[in-house]
Image: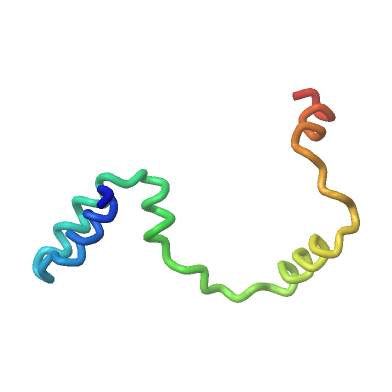
Length: 77
């Protein structure tokens, strides 16, 4: 059993009274940026007409994808 599998098994057996404490301990081990993404509220704002049109334009753009190396070369980077 891997360490991650064991950790999952242990978490599944934490008594309800210890869940908050365990969560707090585990959060200290997670990268702060990743933690903020994991705990961020869902984006529940409806898509605006302008955003919908921008996505449609991007999806219908006939130009081919440009490799990153080509973009960097074009801008002298």
